Amino acid sequence: MNITRPLTSEHSPGSRLLREARHLPPLAWLSLAVIVLTAWASIAPATLVRHSPLETDLLNTLAPFSASHWLGTDEIGRDLYTRLVHGARESFLIGLLAMAIALALALPLGFAAALTPPWLRALMDRLIEILLSFPTLLLALLLVSLLGQSPLNVAIAVGLGSAPGYARLVRGQTLLVRSSAYVEAAVALGHSHARVLLQHVVPNAIRPLIPVTGLGVGKAIVWSSSLSFLGLGVRPPSSEWGALLAAGKAQLLEAPWLMIVPGTAVVLVALSFSTLFSHVQARAEGSQP
Image (tube, rainbow, N blue to C red; front, side):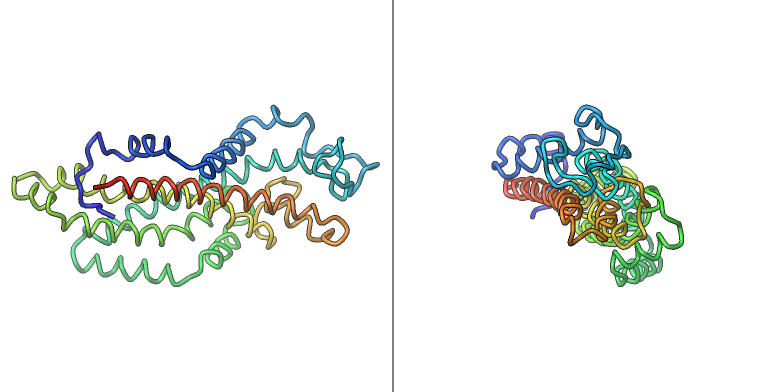
């Protein structure tokens, strides 16, 4: 991958992604459709369902798939399809917020590890390595135990747990861009350090993060659902997908769809993010001279 080419408007990340999106394969378009449908359910769930996710039907508890209950019901007769649609908002927003928090921490930490004086750079490197030594889920479990159980705290915990990996990526890209020929030429021409940093180093260093961001949202949804499944995420009666998985454990043998349906939703959305942004990244890299 050639990341040492100056970033111009013709080759800006946004225009490149839009240009390459026209040549995506059918699987990537299917992934995009899943993401759009999930976003639609997050923004306007009332357009997809007619009932409240807390509405019960005690005459149809643990009912299988049917015309009246497309995805069955839970132990107190709540429609699983309705709960799944309403739960998309929390799951999707947790993933987006967690990724935003991770990037907000990773960018300054990664730039500090690459651009500061040597003694501070070494300190930042050690800090990133220490944080990377903790598994993401383990670190998120620790943080949510300290912060408490809520959607916001889950997003914070997942974001903090994911930040070290992105910081390491930013650090490596920044060091590579800083030693490139066009940065050396800009310095030789007498450009100020601030101008070189803002016009050349920062834009080209963060360019690889654009496809990684999409992959990170899918991973964040999986991590947040894992926390809820372990009992340290969003609490019932929330219909967040991880909470649905946790609630379905007790009826696994009697009503397996209570775990299969939300588990499939989590995997499908995560795979859609991964598939779509992997194709976009591959085409963007392949189109570079």
